[in-house]
Length: 407
Image (cartoon, rainbow, N blue to C red; front, top):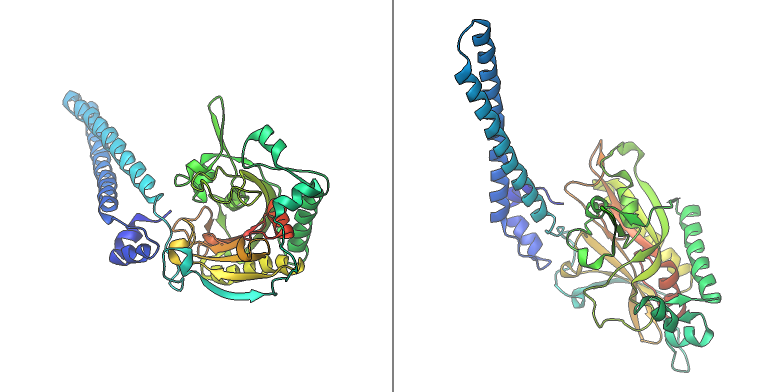
């Protein structure tokens, strides 16, 4: 979440930077709410000071046997005024926070200009797409013919955009996840973490999923308890250190986790509806690095290298693309997409994004410069989806996959 004072101090520069990603920043409501909140705090402090002074006068009047009724009435009136002003200040604070939570992150200065994926810039390629002397079949045809993907029974169980993996398909999913986890923990130095798949609203807000993407989330409710199914392991991994003060000398922290991910894909109607490219539930191996703000770019490049290692080990042809400002995710400062060649589509498709984000107020508070997490796209943290293990990597196997550290 942005800091209101910082946005107001930046002024036109904040407006310009966010305009690069197609967001029209209006500073007027921010300034209004910021002023209201601060004015309430100041007025409440002044009234509390006056209340204490009156209370002392009541004590002196009582000790001297004088009439303190008027002073007592004044004290009661001051306390009521404080309560009223505090309530107004809290309301302004809530409205300001809700507004700030809707403002996307600043794109890094070296992110390409442009509002669509057509403006994305290819950074490098690895491997040559394999040539076939026949027309390659896609993963749906191959998976159903081999009996390892069962979309019909998945639809019977849960509706559209689900799949059942059977036999060698289920084994492949588990094997890929195990391979990625072993690679990242053994070679790249990540700590494997098993995290809850259900998290609370505060946790979702801490990584930017709420309030912006509430329609894309699956929510549960038992009695008065509200929990959300995680859309990515980045959410619980990053929030492991929420509200903690971190010793900068111990950074970076490197975490990996294999979890199911749940997304309604509310804004993707009609896109990639065939097969396992865009499911409501898929498995993913996530990478998260928590580091100092000034180290976030180096950590991001490190994480991209770790994501690329997965693709190279599998012998897949891929390219690395830097996204344009207007194609960045809500919380990202800079994002690299790793796109794998799909023979059946004769094109590269995103297999795993890697991004870095910097938050004005990160979920964790470091003792030195604010730490960040890197995820093949995140706040002073870097995150990457090591591979959407099963679903995504199986897609790689038959044709493609998608990085971030989610496959």
